Each structure stands twice: as C-alpha cells, then as structure tokens.
Amino acid sequence: MSDEHKLMSLMEHIGELRKRLLAVGAVLVLGLIGGLVAAQPIYEYLTTTDQAKDLALHAFSFWDGIGLYMKFALVTSLVLVIPFGFYQLWAFIKPALEPREQRATLRYVPFALLMFLAGLAFSYFVVFPLAFGFTRQINEQLGLEETYGVIQYFTFMFNIVIPIALLFELPIVIMFLTRLGILNPVRLRKMRRLAYFLLVFIGVLVTPPDVVSDLLVIFPLILLYEFSVYLSVSVYRRMERDRASAMSEPEEE
Image (tube, rainbow, N blue to C red; front, side, top):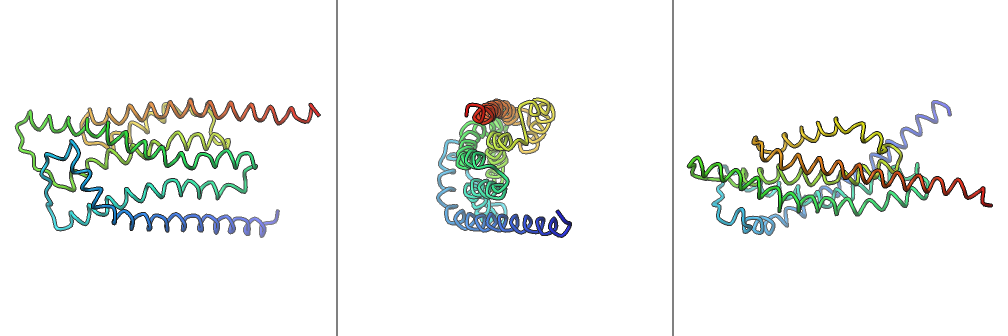
C-alpha cells in the first residue's frame, strides 16, 4: 500500500472516529437536558431516604442549588451515554471484525447499561449507608454538632457511588477485549498485582480520608476484577471451542 493510500485510510478512520465522538457528545447534551428536568424528583427522593430524612441540608453559597442541578444532570446523562458510547465503540471497530465476532461483541452493549445500574444500586444501597453511618457515628462520639451543606452531602455520596458504578463496567470491558483478542486470562493474571494497585489507588482517591470507607470500596473492586478474570476465562474457552470447530469442518467434508 502506498503512503498516499495509507494517509487516506488514516484520515478515513479519523473522520469515522470524529463522527462517533460527535454522536456521543450529542447524546451527552441530551442527557444533561433530561437530567436537569429530572433533578427535582431525584433530589426529593434522595432526601427522603433513611440517610437524609433526618438531616437539615443547608446552602452555603448562592451557587449550591445550580451546582446540585448540574450534578444530577451529569449522573442522569451517564445512564444514556454509557450504553450508547459502548455501541459507538462497537460500530467503529465493526468493519475489522468477522460476522461471528460482530454478533458476539454486540451482545455486550445492553449489559453495559445493566452493569452500570447494578453498580449504582450496590454503591448507593450498600456502600454509601455504611460509609455515611460510620462518619456520623464518629461525629457523635466526638460530640460534634452536625450541620451539613447540601453540596457537601451529595459530593460525599457521588464520590462513592459514581466511581463504583463506572468500575462495574470492568467485567463487560474485559469480556469485550477478550473477545477481540486484545486480552486473555493469562495476561490478566499476570496483570493482577498492577490491577490491585490501581484499584486500591482509585478506592483511596474517590473515598473520604478514612480507612473504613476505603476498604468498603476497595474490596468490592478487587472482587469485581477477579470476577472479570473468571468471565474472561469463560469467553476465551468458548472462543477456543469455536475456533476448533471451525477448523474441523473442512476435514469432515
């Protein structure tokens, strides 16, 4: 292939990637608009749960209300952007895949949304109440009078909930990359120490500065990685069986 053809091919790929990114950006904007509309009912629900119903949340600046709306809008938009972005990634690499690989990898797209929602549910209903209860217990032991700002409360919540929900995409991403041949179980096992270090770093980074909150996030993330390795093994074995079956078909004829 000549340099001119290579350049044309590269520019075509860049143009295709640009089109996919613009589509994701458009969905993000639509999600933000929808999130602004849904912010009020979401706020009302979250402030009537067991954690917040006995709290008096305060605004410490004129911008707190606007900032709160934007936080809710961003979280709501992720529900749309994640599966759509995953589909756009699949569509971008689709021409390089065989028909069987195209069908197999497309099946992962709806699971991207399901795993994100599962991560939201787990982090909000399990991890967040434990972290919130622990911090309030420490304040009570110290005899501190609790006065919470609304931004501080929801920042505390989202710093726990959103990273865990995003990292729940890890099994889908690993299965997808395994199906493409980029990852395999052997490579994932060799990367275990590095993966643990990165997960611990992320867990410490996104949680409040106390050991309990760190552990509440780190342990589920490590379990999630090990579950991802198990899924990768399953996908890899299925690929090996399919490959062996495809190679044996001509011999049978």
